[in-house]
Amino acid sequence: MKKIFTLLLASTLLVACNNTKTEKAEKVETSPAKFTLTVINNTDSDMKWEQSWAMTGPDSGIVAAGDTVKLSSNEVDSDRINIYPIPPKSVTKPNPASGNFGMQYGWDGHIARVYCDNVCNAGRPTPTVQDPGTNWVYVTKWLKDPSVQTNTTNTVTFTTEAWPVVE
Image (cartoon, rainbow, N blue to C red; front, side):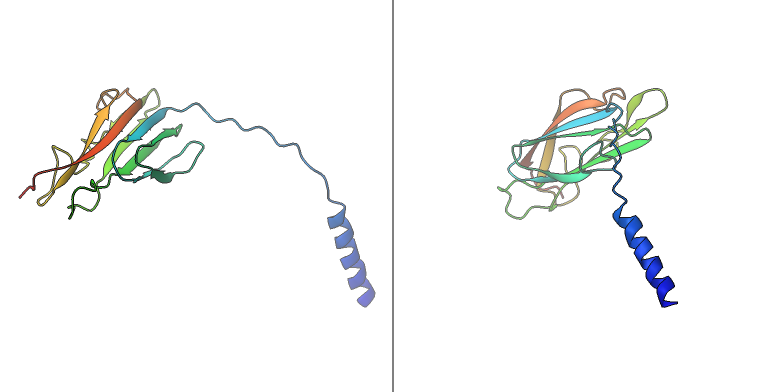
């Protein structure tokens, strides 16, 4: 029995040590991006971002104050992008502590399109959407109108400012 066990162990080691076959790595290509959103942070604070389907990079991160990040996706179903603006440093007791911004893109089988822009997602606080006690807002400036369904390649610039308190 001891000899059989030794023989099996030696055979396993021999096979494992001789298994040096390497396979040629295949180059994997991705489909072109169907949705891209370039985010420019013109605020005085870093902002977190996340997206449900990142094409080749991470699906979340930070866009530093004064920096830019390009988010892209080739997802055939849907891609949701969220950004969380921070109040300006000049506001001493900010309310709310952070904001939310959301865009949802999709592929309907024929075209890439905007499913729901930030207005549809009720992003806040903005000059048009605040809750009681809000004392700052974020403002977005777009390269192209984000509510047009076919504007799936776009750029948005964020700024923040103090705002009169809403009661």
